[in-house]
Image 1 (spheres, rainbow, N blue to C red):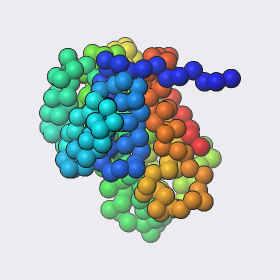
Image 2: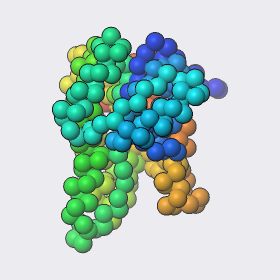
Image 3: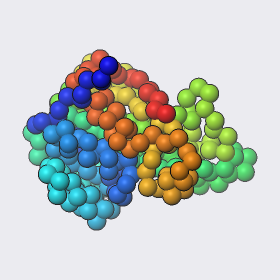
Length: 242
């Protein structure tokens, strides 16, 4: 049996964070939304990175705009969110919180305390900042939000030596569930994907070919599906990708 295609996003706006470097997960997610007809607003920390990714998408016929912002700066992200939404009648149909990162961090006893702070900043604070800023506009569209967790934090996962990373991704799941429960009356959905490792340029450079990767395109397909009307009854879920 062939899976039903993800509905198109013609006339809709998708916001994707973490679209800085080429060959990363956010890059693939932004492209998939664009292929499905969405207008795509991409966010990266550095303006040059965002502009480069948007230029690549536009060369392929995708309506993409570039925005630079520190997602943990509440005032900055609120301003960017307002600008983006204003260009779409105050509506944001999909928010994909892809920004984040990985550090092994070491064991609880001997690891680097700074790694804990850094990972909670890049994985949790970034997702919280973007979600809080865009929520009014996602509500207006009765839209959806997707977060990125990790298979490592699911039952049976191995977290030894990566406690800081695992704790931050567990916090992302808690954040997602809070949004799903709090925003249900506003018809906003929130879900999280928990991949093993995505075949990004950075992961491939670090781990080589031996690891059983989740392909970037498969990950992007799932993000788009969860933000689409086909998943209208799916909220508060953590979906493992392996």
